[in-house]
Length: 252
Ligand code: HEC
Ligand code: HEC
Ligand code: HEC
Ligand code: HEC
Image (cartoon, rainbow, N blue to C red; front, side, top):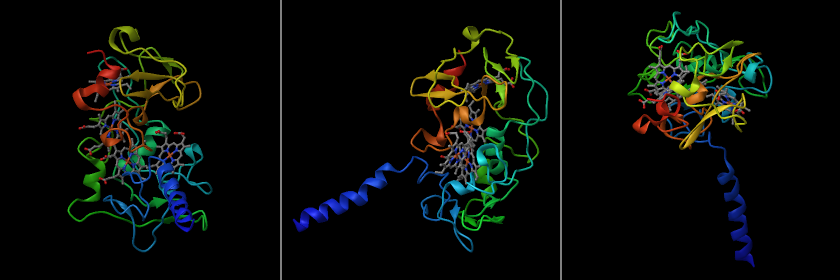
């Protein structure tokens, strides 16, 4: 009986570990306990919380997404149009701007409005990184903003998806026909903030309705799942192997 109780106790301890959400232990788990990743909280003002780097329940920096991180200085593309004639936004919408807070490399990763739920005060959480890699290099990667000024050189975001009405205007895609160049939209898509998505082998790519009147557009979160390490490398919703993620939207 004693040993049975012991076994039960072990099981009871083990279960919550299994139930952990998929952000736990990922590169977006910047808590002090996640020592397995290069960038995590440590030093003088560490936190064992995960969400606090991005969302705070109180005293967040802004209401949208109860966003807690200090904004960076990169807002969008320098202007101009895509080859199909869609305007590239000089200010991307909140879901993509949120990523740029850290990924434009202009603000410290730990620069948040509310450091903990207990003190709710403004402050900077200390994060650390490995020595052989500068933080800027790691966050900007080879894909993102290199000049600290704009988003030029990156796949368009905060743009309409072909066939969807976005930002109160129809898609600017010249074909005007989702069936020709782009995969059709799936309606009633669970887990998509707009309710619509692109269904692909191995995953779905949600479209965002980032402001009133929007029906569905492409944001960083269409291709990446910020909370989910269980997806493919780079938090991708569909694998980049064979460019599957590109072929999910583009009929090429
Ligand atoms: C590294 C930044 C980051 C961290 C850490 C983070 N989030 Fe988010 N979260 C975002 C962004 C960005 C969005 C906007 C939607 C998107 O782009 O997927 C979002 C959206 C959300 C949403 C609304 C949309 C949805 O997906 O349901 C909820 C709820 C949410 N986060 C909860 C959490 C919780 C709970 C935690 C901690 C366990 C957490 N987030 C940690 C960045 C983060
Ligand atoms: C979620 C759907 C989606 C995915 C996934 C996607 N694209 Fe796109 N892509 C679009 C949309 C929408 C546009 C904008 C079309 C327009 O309005 O001009 C676009 C535009 C482009 C353009 C034209 C850019 C310009 O400025 O003229 C290229 C090239 C491109 N995508 C390549 C890619 C590649 C390569 C991948 C994979 C890494 C990819 N796309 C993944 C939806 C997607
Ligand atoms: C609070 C700061 C913060 C925010 C906000 C944030 N990230 Fe990150 N992101 C990081 C850090 C730190 C890393 C890990 C860098 C490293 O270890 O090389 C990272 C890594 C990544 C990676 C690479 C993952 C890998 O496996 O190498 C991707 C992709 C990424 N983030 C996308 C996003 C997207 C998309 C958003 C918004 C939806 C976002 N991030 C928001 C801090 C942030
Ligand atoms: C159309 C799809 C798409 C969109 C939209 C998109 N990404 Fe990515 N991203 C990718 C793919 C695919 C990769 C993997 C590239 C590779 O394998 O070389 C990637 C890689 C990354 C990486 C890792 C780069 C590295 O070299 O370490 C980061 C960070 C990242 N994306 C952030 C973002 C942010 C922030 C946004 C919004 C401003 C965004 N992505 C929008 C498809 C996308």
